[in-house]
Image (cartoon, rainbow, N blue to C red; front, top):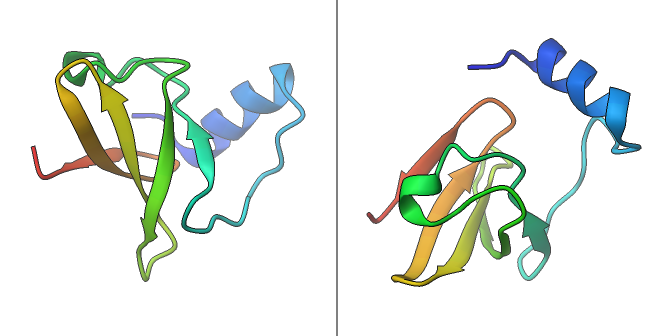
Length: 83
C-alpha cells in the first residue's frame, strides 16, 4: 500500500493534479490503478460520485459488465461497499 508521500511524488512527476480536490455528488471520477480488476474496475474506469462520506471520502458507482459496483475511495486504499 502506498503512503501519501509516495503517491503524491509518483503522480506529481507525471501529472499536474493538485494535492487535494473537493468532490460532490454527481462528479465524474476516473480510477487510476488496477487494484479492483477482479470487479472489472481498472485503470481508466470512470464512475459517478453518489455520496460523500463524513470523512470526505467519495462513494463512487462504477458501471461494469456485471452491473454497478460501488466503492468508497481514498488516497491510500479502496474499500468495496455492497459486494
